[in-house]
Image (cartoon, rainbow, N blue to C red; front, side, top):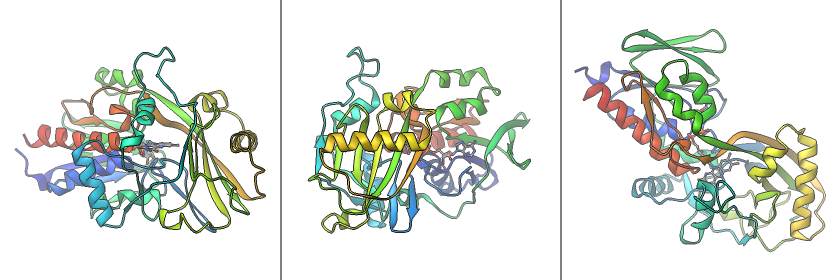
Length: 351
Ligand SMILES: Cc1cc2nc3c(=O)[nH]c(=O)nc-3n(C[C@H](O)[C@H](O)[C@H](O)COP(=O)(O)OP(=O)(O)OC[C@H]3O[C@@H](n4cnc5c(N)ncnc54)[C@H](O)[C@@H]3O)c2cc1C
């Protein structure tokens, strides 16, 4: 049996799943290298910096149902990487009821909406992408490396190739935490065992980041499914700012999965125009002048049909797919899947 210090694992993706997997492996003494295609960490726990502060344009808040993830949120709070958030919330009537529209099984997003009343909400502090800070340790994280191929080098090791002709490895195991369709592209050529990833369905989401010159004159800080076009609209400030209306007043709008699908290839200007018109309609107020506005398209935002198990492995357990999409549509699903992938890798390699 190899010693932990002789084992080298690559983790593809530095979102919640990838960093939870990497930190779990690192804490057992295994050598981990994280490869991330973006410039920043956090994946869909995303924040965009502007001249007057940050917009959280991906995940908006985090809840915990699993004791392990609850403990993580407590640790993150003590670490000043998380804070409670209790916005003045308006609940609209357009919330989804099922994944199929038939009223049968509840989709992960619908279940999430249904459970909100009982749950404490957290945000990353001071902005969403900082929530992963307790997981970042002394292991190497190579940013701006998009992995495009995983090549078996021997029966028990793998090389990774990026889109700039770079190669990395050999690694004794690889954990892939990209969203399901992107993970499938990497894993399909390796083994038919990864076929079930194709059954996962992820919905897109258009996000609009609008900064108004004056505070938006509404009594709410957040609106949940206020209309069929908008699934979420919220003032994008930290909770300690809630009582001091800053200007510009920054709002994030998320288009509903249905609207985002129907407008997936629209240009950003058109999306901004339509979603601001929908916001004006639901809030029944004249929108203040815009200071600035941007849009971001999440092609794979929220899981509609998950894999149904916490990870999927092949190549004798040495290549593992993980991510929120294994279990659901929430940050907690990503954390649990990353943890499960790390434990499976440890079991495979160290017994
Ligand atoms: C608009 C929106 C709103 C949301 N709202 C909420 C919410 O309110 N509450 C909640 O709990 N959840 C919410 N979610 C879902 C939540 O953000 C995700 O469940 C969670 O962040 C997923 O983490 P992950 O690590 O599985 O994936 P990701 O965060 O997507 O991380 C995967 C990482 O892999 C990287 N990557 C992909 N391909 C490659 C490659 N080939 N090479 C290298 N790196 C690669 C990506 O750049 C990314 O950093 C929302 C998501 C979106 C988009």
